[in-house]
Image: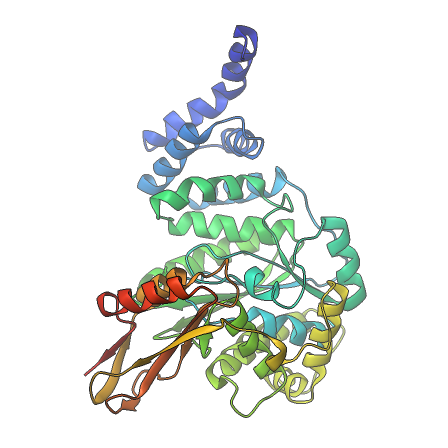
Length: 427
């Protein structure tokens, strides 16, 4: 029971934040004190979901100036915990929205094997069948305290952990909870969210992956260019060296979606299997190369070859695999785990092509719907193995993909749903 004195106190506490929300709803710009007050109230859960929603909606409608983006990012980072490291701290982030493109788990051991610290805080699935944290959890625990993360990174050079409970930029996690039911996320909000987490993680050198595609968060190249410039503006403000990789995506770079299936993809690349997903490998090497070039430019370590050539050497020589095994062991997993040790759903169904033709399209939304019906990401063994790619020819009754689940009723529901949400378009 709240007494009237507590009620009066909470209203007084929120008065500055309230006036800031009203100001933003009227389309006016906020100063740093107003923004900090808002982020502080949100971070400490004093504002409540209704007023937080008003703020999110106001920002979505009007957008933010570059100065406001700077204030939001700084306030979001300053109202939470921070990780502390010395020297160059590398990081990578993707705006994402695409299933089955698990570059982070290959890139982190490459960067760590090159001698740079890379404490990677990753998210669980928000819009896709598996987040990096869900996939890494197949190989090792991902939930640690900030102090433990600092010790692990000092020991191995890298980690792949879940950032959701660390208290880094806590206002962001609460705003995400408000946005999720509405299923919208403004570009400005994505930018602030990413940069606040990077600052709180102590990043000094950052590669940003901005995939563009009709069924992704960023649908047009012109939007990607605007987002890129805003990232660069904020990175300069916080003295973070940044490289941006804008790339068109038509389909997943890996062979499968779902935590266990994606973990298999990652290990196939690290173990250099002949049937590994080469598109996933190529994209990871490009991103790792750009990040290494950034780091070497400010490092006493000088390399004769380009960052991408070094990344390729570290992968093909097995040094990246050794580093990944070290990271897995330090995080409490089985460092000897191999591709075929990873179990996948006991029930499966082969989806056959109903006609002869060419794969002309791939629907990421529909893939996500089917994967979630199968049980992703909670059922880590569930998912979809993709057998055909865009531009490939198929005959009638060729296998297009294989559905996996540990629940036969979920599998049946996915099979029944598939005709209404087809993953492939064949013409």
